[in-house]
Length: 540
Image (cartoon, rainbow, N blue to C red; front, side, top):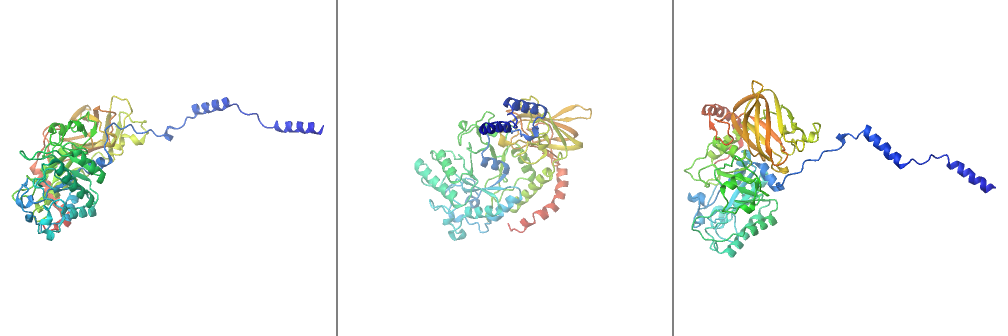
């Protein structure tokens, strides 16, 4: 009986607990809650759009962000008044008694160039470092008592100043006896390349080309082997040649790119020393490789220093800047050291003026306080990561992105008051691929109607368009055609008081109003005297 009573007591006690809730009821309750109280969209991030291939490597991206590099042609040609040396000049002529590589780097850095490239060996075969594979170097000269090393001095100066270093090693060698013997010379060349890439710290660019005079010895260069060696020894370096693999020649030595310029390229359609210049200039919208263009030009008529030559004007350099950096390219400006081993005073003066012209034009974005709206925004108007206002933030890593699958891509700007401008700057976030094919800029005229101001084609890292000065408060950027949904990282409006553009074509060459130039340059020098005082202390 007691056992039975205990069982009953236990039964009575357990019955006090509620019955389990059905799983179906839990699910139903959750669904009702989600319907009436949905999870806030702000709690979930919209991912960025997919990049459109090809896209740049890390080293290519850093190269493009630098915008300008300084080329330094220097060697026995500097002392023999030559351009393409014969390879027979006595090495004793090389004696730059005042050589100061720190001056070269300082001049470059103060003028806005954060990369320098030295002709470690030009076509004449004279080496600017003590190579173990030839005596044709400073070892055979009186300079530094035969123990000089230009590459070492420049590498140290660049490293101390935080300036990237690149080296040019000419494949064509008019001095080396084994040139023309394919296997032997390729071994020789790779031996010299190994010296350069293992002795001097980090090298950020390796520059070579297919230049060779007519009637010279015929031989095959083992480019693929060279490139593999460079990748092995300096994996962070970009490799330049007529056809890449990392950067390509623009196809001329005037520093001018095509008004349509793609970073896309097909390396299989190009050969070093034999690429169609028109293909190099424009790139390829169907290209499978990312190979942006480099525009090389000399500040003087020649590439090496000649006492009889004078530098281009700062205004000419500004025009080149618009047609190179302003067309999705890097500008490689050659500024050759003179026979004393210094950059000449007149060249420094031109670089000062060029730098000041850029500063006076591009230091202030006239659209910085604009109200910006867009035809659509990825993730909706509250999605700040893709908001149209991002186009007023400098840099390429923030950008406006439209909603997917839209046929209308428009950025509208209200400047809040009428503003005069004559330069448009546009940038794409190139780490997401190059997209824009065609675009145009509209302004709202006095009658309240939209009027097309100028057409443009490719954008890429940076596009600068010039046009006659216009004054307006309302404008809109319309992307007419794109490889994928367009992404715009920066939009700037500027006033250039120096260039006078006669028409609205983005391929036109500006002329210059000399009266305006004289007035502006006259007021420029006080600024220059203070900001460049350090350079005036250097004897050239």
